[in-house]
Image (tube, rainbow, N blue to C red; front, side, top):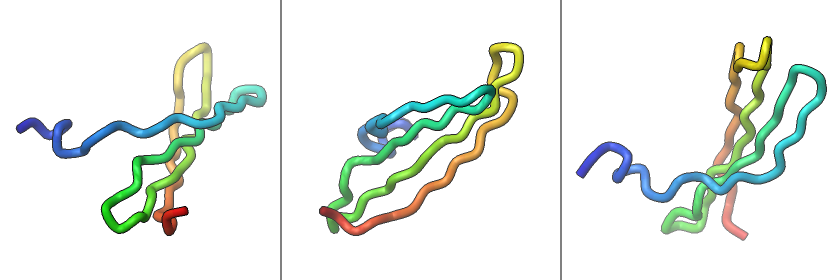
Length: 64
């Protein structure tokens, strides 16, 4: 079993918004067995058409 197989299904992508050279992408992972979910946003800084920086903010939330 490879490392990617251990991660399970990939995230579900949500809204993508942009303003100037900033891009925000919302995402969530499928619920865990206990019903909790990992949700987050990726924030990108774009320069000359390339990603110059990326920050990730996430948290685990109760299901439902």
